[in-house]
Image (cartoon, rainbow, N blue to C red):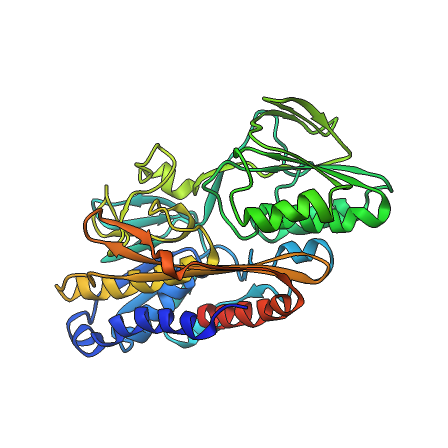
Length: 412
C-alpha cells in the first residue's frame, strides 16, 4: 500500500509553504478578486485554498457550468457496476459556505488585456488574477461519433453511455478500445480499463482488442504486461504503435496504421490536448496543444495574470486529479504571494498517487513526487520518491481511503 506518512508529508510541505505566509498575505492581498474557471480537482481546490489561506480576505469566484463535478477517479468502476456516478458526484456547497461565489455558466472568451471574461449568458466578470482549470480536449479522428463510439474519458454521461452499451452486448462479443498517445488524462487509466473490460467479457466468452498509440505499455508495464499476457491472455489482443486514422460508427470499425479493425463495440479514446477554452484563446503555446506555464506559479507564458493548472498545462507532470489538487495548492499560494507583491515559493513540491483496479477485486498503485529544478526551470521527478505495488486486495481497499481523502480535501 502507499506509504501514508510520506504522502501526508508531501501534502504538509505544500500547505506549510503557504500557511507560513498567510498573515502577511491576508493583510496585503485584501480586496483583490481571483476568478477560477473549472470546478474539478484543480479549480475547486484552488478556490477553497485561496479563501482559506487568505483568511477570507480575497474575493474568489468559481465559474463552472455543471451543478456538480463527476470524478474521473474510480469512474472505470462504474462500467462494471462496482461504483455509481452518484457517489462520484460532488457539489459546491462547501465552497459556497466558505465564501466562494459560485457561478454556473460557461466562459465564452477571455479578454486578457482588460482582464475580463465574457460568459455564455451574456454577462461579464472582471478579475485581478485568473486561474484556469478547464480539463482536457480531444483530437477526434475523422468520422468520430462519441454517441456511438463513446470515450467515457470525461466522467458523466459518457460513462453511463459506455456502461449501457457494454451491458447490451451479446455473448462472445468483440470489443475494441484505443489507448491515446501520451500525454493524456489519467485516471481514468486506459490499461486499467482494458483489464476491467476483459474481466467483464471473460465470463461471457468475449474478446478485447487493445490498440495502443504508444510504442508499448507506458504505465506500470510489469503489472499490466502480466495481466495482458497471462491473466487475460485468452481475452486481450494487444497491439502497440497503432494510430487511428478514421472511424466508422455504422460498422463499429476503425481504419488504422495497422489496417482495419471492427467489432461489436468500439471504446474510442482519442488523442488529447488542452481544453477548448485554452486553445480558442491562444493560450496553447506548446505545439499548439498545451499551455506553457511557469511551474513556480502556473502563470501562463503568453498571458500575464492568467494561471493554468490541471490537464491543460504543459509542465510534464501527470495529468491526474491528485496532481491537479497539488498544482492548485502551489498556484493558490503563488497567487496570494503575487497579489502581495511577493515572489512565489522557490522550491514547490507536488505529489501524485494513483490506484488502478485491475479485476479480481485487486488494485495496483504508484506514487511519485516532483520538485522544481532551478537549473532547468522545470518540475522534475524525485527519483527516490517513486514507488509502485503489484495488484493486491489490500490495495483495492486502500484505494477507497485514498480517493475519499482526496474527495474531501477538494470538495469538503
